[in-house]
Structures are given as C-alpha cells and as structure tokens.
Image 1 (cartoon, rainbow, N blue to C red):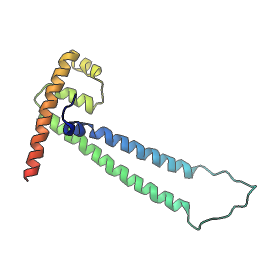
Image 2 (cartoon, rainbow, N blue to C red):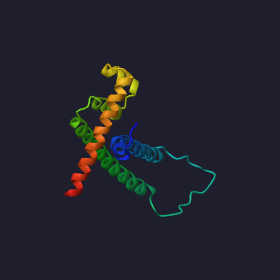
Image 3 (spheres, helix red, strand yellow):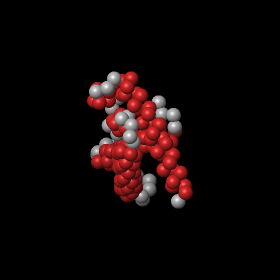
Image 4 (tube, rainbow, N blue to C red):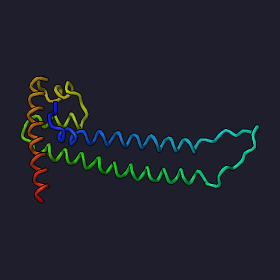
Length: 148
C-alpha cells in the first residue's frame, strides 16, 4: 500500500492519462460515425433549414480540438512514463522491478511474483521498501526544485 499521496499520484499518472486519451478517442469515433453515416431521409415532412450554419464546420472544429488535445495528452503520457522509469532506475531496492511491472507493465502482484521468481510475501516486502525509497527520492527532488 502506498502511504504517500504524492508518490501514488506520480505512479498512476500514466493510467490516468491513458483513460483520458481513451475518452477522447471515443468522442472522436462518435463524431466520425455521427457524420459519416447517412441520415434517414424523411419524405413525410418538409425539409426546412432552421439555421444557415453548417454542422460540418462545427464537427471539423471539434474534431481538430480533440485531436490536438489527444496529441498533448500522449506527449504527457510518454513524459510520465519516462519520469517513472528514470526514478525507478535510481532505486537500489530489488522492489524497483515490482514497481516497474505493477505501474508500467500493469501486471497483477501474482503475475509479478511469478515473473521475478519470488514468493508473494518477499515480493511485497521488496515492493514496500522500494516505495519508501521512491517516496524519499520524490521528496528530495521536490525540495531541490523548490530551492531553484
């Protein structure tokens, strides 16, 4: 269990960004299908144009905004992954491998224990030591950035 909220937020940032990217992808797909599929033509009513606005221009504008936001989030995602990998590489604890597989590889603890050929109990001990070490490392780097 992660005791420090800052460490937890640091480690789950790629997952949060992935969800945001997926949400944007869904909205883009919805827009694409909404305008790509032909509308049903009704012959029982007169077709009256309510507004001179072209809905296609709104669609294109919204899609362009979403694609720019997706690109920004993807850049942040890769930066977050790189930050985590950089910090994990500085850890001396054998639990660094567990943190990597848990938060970057998105593996379960049972899968990780099998991968690293340790008992789950020992793996949890290593994991908790590595989290404490990572928490201290993040605090030190935050203190250094405040001084600059």
